[in-house]
Image (cartoon, rainbow, N blue to C red):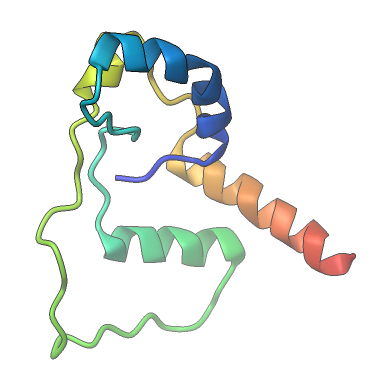
Length: 102
């Protein structure tokens, strides 16, 4: 599960409210959509226009079987991510291209 970092700017003013509503409990911020590392790598490949081959080393452990956090506390407060993973990657890549030119 991934969330565009720009979403955190939306969350910052809400932190006080979250502390009051959730106390000391943790609150996951994410899209609620499961995305595998392979899917993420293929999406990054597409966004940046990489024409090479992605190579997977299946002899290595693949880490946590599932990478999905429960964002229901935030959803219950009416928060939903407004930036899709793809759009967040596109925006970040555009920013990066502008940054490296400086």
